[in-house]
Length: 124
Image (cartoon, rainbow, N blue to C red):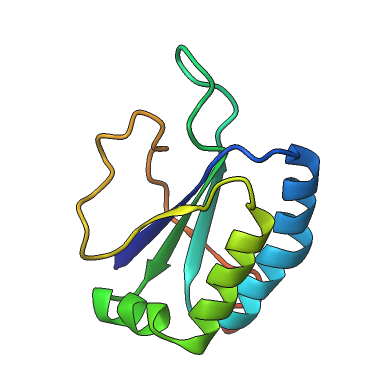
């Protein structure tokens, strides 16, 4: 498996961001990212200062090739465009499959087995 990480900076209006993420972005990801697994972590506090990130989404694909294919698709452009729309104060950061790992980031959550995006995995 390969992982893509999207880091969202602290929003100006956390309540509106949370609403838009849950009611708009998650359903859009479920529709457009078929077969992907996503683990989302909310960052609530930093060790000393406010954390540099508010939310982290880890998007897992079967391979780097599968993630790269999605990143070059029209579906990705729609999902990424929506991510920028709901985070207008500062753009989300993305760590792509070919860039260095962000494991040195002190706010990176420990990796847990990812859960499927609701509706993205076929029923057994």
